Image (cartoon, rainbow, N blue to C red; front, side, top):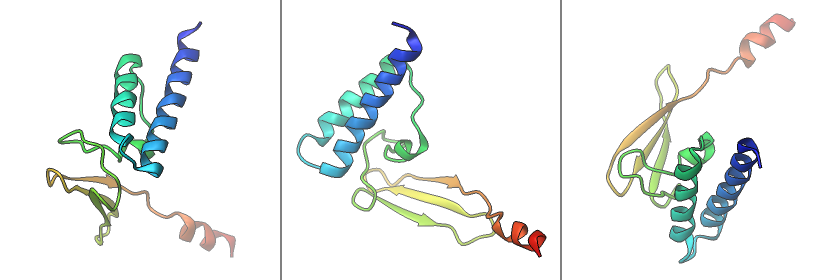
Length: 109
């Protein structure tokens, strides 16, 4: 089989494993995450942002939003999503895009 097909299958399997760990959150959740991380490293996959924020960038642990991490939105002019890991206390930020809806509505009038 081609490498691209194998990578697509591996990414699909990773998504299934992470979703089952996130929504079921049972005693097998950590095992699902370990298997998913092995697949990611073996096939050198790029994880989508939605799944990437589920891992701490410092301690590399799986963090469930609201249980193992706190998520806040910054109040300054540059809006940022701030995620704090409750295991190691590391905070990392993801800049949010500016809302272009206002500029588009002015042009319509």
